[in-house]
Image 1 (cartoon, protein in one colour):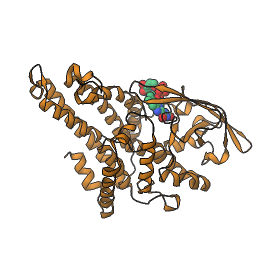
Image 2 (cartoon, rainbow, N blue to C red; image 1 turned 180 degrees about the vertical axis):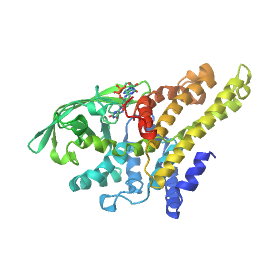
Image 3 (cartoon, helix red, strand yellow; image 1 turned 60 degrees about the vertical axis):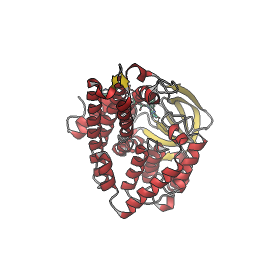
Length: 399
Ligand SMILES: Cc1cc2nc3c(=O)[nH]c(=O)nc-3n(C[C@H](O)[C@H](O)[C@H](O)COP(=O)(O)OP(=O)(O)OC[C@H]3O[C@@H](n4cnc5c(N)ncnc54)[C@H](O)[C@@H]3O)c2cc1C
């Protein structure tokens, strides 16, 4: 058992209710999490019928809407339960569905949305009935989101939205677009952006696929005079940028989950125990052993960073840049893991799933392609290092 697991088991689930929650969740996942559902998200096939059904069951069993008031379909509960939920999925190498709705849209609507919006969306998110897609990035505005150009212009009780988003990953299967657009051209750029909830299939929206190296589908999304009712404006106009960054450390932390790598490392270690390289046991190959041991040490270090940040969150402390550190360290580690594994496995490691000669069913090859996005999405490594420099180390904001 890894130290990460010990810390999480004994400190995060510290009350009888939390331990009962963890047991109930574990039983639920043993019963309901099929291999088919588990693989939908990593391969980013979108939420197919099995995934949707699984999400609804998760909601019906009371595992979504943790910490939200019951009047909005929430189930109460502590931040520790939310952490347990995400860690339990990570341990099973499964992706918890609907992260945009659970971690971004839901909490912002709860804090800033109108009563009408809360009643319309929160119960359906908590019931696992609706999926949201993230609509922030544009061709000129990725790291620098305040540079976005998409315009939402007021027209009576509607907003008319025009412009283009890019890399909007869930748009081809989401029900709603969690959309940021410029609502003021004269104000300073951080005070000119608003958030909207848009029906993803509204007239005027075109969704074009972008297929990535990792096999994941993402999308370019075009808005052409899309009419959105003012009731779909989230909170106050021109406050969207602040809403977006409000909970960013929390999101980065909850989306990290380095424990995922533990199972992969175990599979690689087991493979090394039995495989041969040039007729000799791979387990005795000096370079492979060194590499594997380094992976183990790096994983333990990453798990400690993560456990520390989760512990602060669990104790109700404000996290400053700890979520960013966890995302930065974990994403770079996942890439290194893939390349280290390829080195250990040798030429056969490059073979993809489906080849009878592919070690670990092509997992290292797949991982080396799929982890390219890790150091880009959710903030690039360069940008995150800047965040750690100014927020964590209190250096001046700009170099
Ligand atoms: C597969 C994929 C899925 C995605 N899914 C979504 C999604 O669902 N929704 C969504 O809204 N977005 C999504 N994104 C967008 C993602 O968040 C952005 O790609 C990311 O924020 C980087 O923005 P950019 O691509 O415009 O790169 P840029 O911001 O143009 O950066 C280019 C390079 O410059 C560096 N750089 C930029 N600014 C600085 C700085 N200040 N200091 C030092 N270096 C800097 C960056 O690190 C990077 O190396 C996705 C991206 C990909 C690739």
